[in-house]
Length: 406
Image (tube, rainbow, N blue to C red; front, side):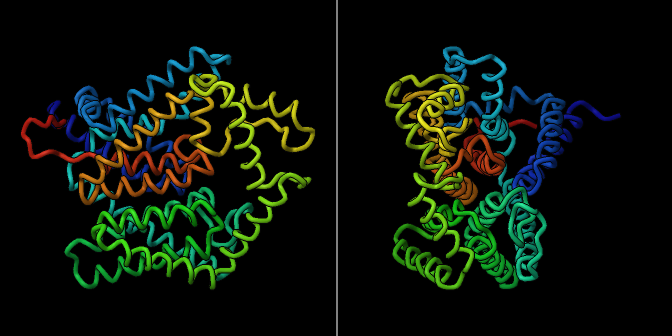
């Protein structure tokens, strides 16, 4: 007969495996991620250790800031002039941070973190090889994306490979065999090729240098920053010379930025400029408190409808900028609390080498890309971030007073 202690331990092991599966699947399949997340929560609750793990999460600096930020989101829901279904929908859109908080109390052992990093790198290396071959063969899997893109979107695929590059940088620092180091080096080359040649994601182009400089600085020391900057500059320079995809996307972006006021059609860069301009105008009218959680659509849409008669007056639910979204809905205080969580997570990650530093580097990547999309909450990249930070950020202190679950 299986004892309760054995059942609890097996449930937590199953829960951790499901979290690893969800983290790897996050950029690849929304359906798989959703099922894995649901099953993970069931296993977590069935273990009987939910309270214990939540206490561990609440004891973390980043965990404390998640609780404070969530509390402010909830307060903001009460003064938003929207229906409660809309308020609940917006609160649920921040569930990625809730996953992060839960995972803090489950992944504090280095062997589980190592397993996640190596599993993620291995799967992404295979994915990068497949994507590269599809691109070379000019095979399109998804109608709305170019050749070589088979994940949820070209942005998800690009950010997945940025995260994989970060994993590779830290793995190269470990005492590996020459054969394994060669594999990691080749994998990194495949990731870089995919980011700049296969994918059309400008988010990846921008996030890559910031994330890699931060990761390499953590791994090899900031005294080597000049060499790191030179290496990254060389990679980007070669990509600019050799990648038609990168050249076309940058040229298209600059043209869209220059012509957004006269363009008869909505463009990717044009809508972001319009969203930013009007969001800032609305923020200036109520900068401290904002309009409340779930208020973006009900505040922004009538404002632009009166102002424009073309596509710029279309309704919108998100400004494609995470920071403007938080500031407009939750005010300056909400934005400060949001930044406080980011700073707390990065500081905690840098103090925990190598796995916490990987989490901090992925967080830096998403912070940069979130200038152009709401990657913390709205898009699949939010799940990728949630599992990287949740799984890798916390480590067990040598102090025996560190509480642990089975």
